[in-house]
Image (cartoon, rainbow, N blue to C red):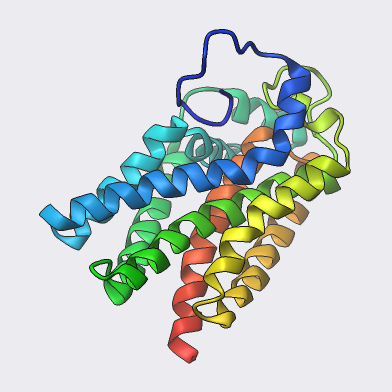
Length: 253
């Protein structure tokens, strides 16, 4: 209900405690979004060019989440680009309007994501069973690992906003070992399976979590923690880093 636009049964209501416990399933959402994106790509590639299929796959992922993470990325670009104090940065990120920094950031993000995914799928192909499985696992792993990198910030750092103005704040209040183990399991399992094709795929974790480290350090420096927008931005950046890392691994092995 919180992480996607997929309809839920009417008897399921919203509760802050549910949202807190749902953090363990955030990487599992990556399985769903990645699976939907792959299905759209696979079906579109039968009818259209690779370029069109990749664009439709990206659109499918955005529609599934309601641009949840892309919105966070744009807000972070605007907030940290236009603010010079913690209070100003948080105020800008809270504003629903998008500015120049956010617009430029999204354009560059989508260009890089498009080119990276196109490079990957063009190299592997999907028109035999083994290749299709490999591409499917690439899509799912990118989404699950990037979401793991984002939700792990909740387990290691403090929430920045002091009031209750954010919808994401319940996630930051309480968590147990169940949330940590669940997030790790759902986040890493697709990549572990992918590594059966090529063990070097596991090396992708290094650049992804290096990116996560520097993002968190940057957030900590300026706003003394993180916000929901910071988590969304981390997911988007780490997803792109995942794709680029796979390309780099294939280039040198």
